[in-house]
Length: 364
Ligand SMILES: Cc1ncc(COP(=O)(O)O)c(C=O)c1O
Image (cartoon, rainbow, N blue to C red):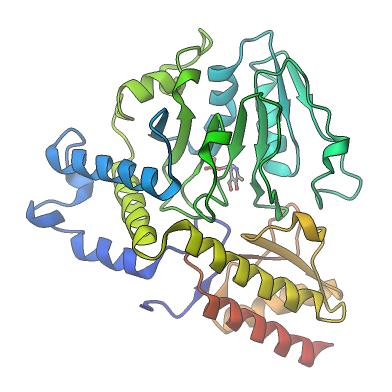
């Protein structure tokens, strides 16, 4: 189904599946015959109770999340959890490990220093900016860390882990904001998986935290009630009014992904889409250049430069004229970035590649 003439390559908020938007539109004024919009429903009423329970059951099915993990639907964005994670999982005098591979994990580590005394940086300082994940031989994990934190996919720099880091039994926390639901993951390898919804899940306004239950209940005394995961888990994410509409939209996306082959299918699509785009960049005789080292390249956010950097604004302008929008690189790094989450189709990526070939022919 196509409803729009643009292809939205935004890093987030990002494109949602048109089928999901159409269903939300059809149900907007009168949800399942109850005479009200989802936005108007009581969060304690029977309709919304079913919406949140179905959403939880569906993400549990999609990601094969075992019963000993709680799934929390929270507000405050991923950024709020930069504080909530150390507050819930470490004491003020503890040591925690952070793998800094880009701007998001860097921010998370900075925030943790407010709540935990020893924030150890596992990786050496990057020599060429954030363009690679250093080899395991260069990691310095602390033996006594309460947890190891990493960002599975760095949205700004386009750096993604291809395997789950080995922490020798130390609880592992993953920020999956920008690659949530893009491939099957073995949830049992993680203490916490979390992320903002606005990239690969649904609208902004909701953050998902998947946490192993034995880690609940040890929050620091200063932890605000709203940031205490055990309070949220005990109350089924409804200690206060939850982000109802965002939860409903995410639920529609979960169901849509299940109906369309689940995460294995989307993983294949992501490999095909990102593979084609990187091949186009690498095969451009240097006209385009992807700065990230091959083994650390993201399948979701693909930053690239033009050899003639002065042509980048022209590239963006001409792409926009052809309906390809939000291709500008993050303001901190410049250049171009194509974000190709689940809702972006292989055809849409082909359209971008065709445009890149054409642009190269005209401007080489
Ligand atoms: C990987 C990653 N982590 C964290 C964040 C922060 O998310 P939020 O804006 O929901 O706080 C972002 C936002 O783009 C992100 O891409």
